[in-house]
Length: 386
Ligand SMILES: Nc1ncnc2c1ncn2[C@@H]1O[C@H](COP(=O)(O)OP(=O)(O)O)[C@@H](O)[C@H]1O
Ligand SMILES: [Mg+2]
Image: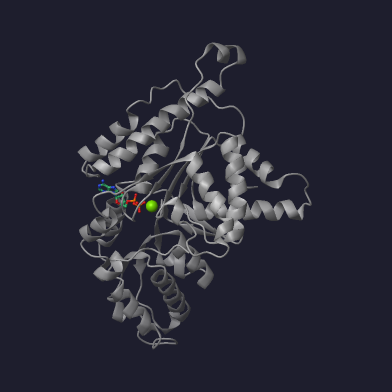
């Protein structure tokens, strides 16, 4: 069963007044010193606030009986929002704030990459079952049955086949009054830059621009970097009685005190359990990632999905732990290639993690990467999600 067809039916929309709600929530975070007031973020919040009110009105209208609808004022249309800007500017944070504030269940927030995997799975099942009819329309209707609002984080397109499906799917979804909030590092016009057959992609850009209000978020600074700098270190050792606290503090600092909700990553039908996931940040342990039978493709998936990994309890490894050491190297390679920012606790310094045993010589590259990953230059590099 696909995630996006998990629930359906009419849902109750509370008669709640949502005006000003997002500003109240933002202000509360400012007062608690979790956020710094940023005028550019407030501008975007303003648009999200209008959308919030319109979506709630529109859902309340949909729930009215026909007779009551005739007597009511037709609600304002809900224009989807596409937020773009550099990393760390607060795009995901604003989307989260908006998403959490939406007082209804017909909503879904999903990393764009995960959504695409579901779309592929739908296509695969459709073909396997030899279903006939309009596949994309059916998919859109199934999504709409449970979802009025779709929030996509880190929208990007790397493949023309995906782009063709998306063009048709989004146009059906918009026609069915699905509302989207999208974050991306790129303006719609810059999506799929230099991609093959890009001319086929241009109608999709037009569609996005027609249905979405495109907002730039030129926030004052890269807040992610600021929070990374605020940590006492990013490689904490040894594992003493403060190590767990360090992990907790890092998570709090980087997520503005979000709750730790366990997550999972699905890769080709397999699942990796993760201690906590918040947006594009993941909290996991050496045990979860390196003592399980995982390989390069799992780590690459993880590294493309998340921009930041908080990893606890890296042990000193003896020759008996050569498999774990090998997996750890593969993990670090994947993180390094994708420029994932790593915060970790370890028993010993990088150059003492694995000194003898198979692959100890090659492990030197891992040590060097671990050190480089602490550098200012690495911290400032952009995550590579493709
Ligand atoms: N105004 C702000 N003050 C302090 N921290 C912020 C602010 N805006 C965002 N952050 C924090 O900065 C980090 C990066 O924000 P995020 O929303 O992930 O950026 P983006 O999605 O644009 O890359 C997060 O930890 C977020 O909580
Ligand atoms: Mg983001």
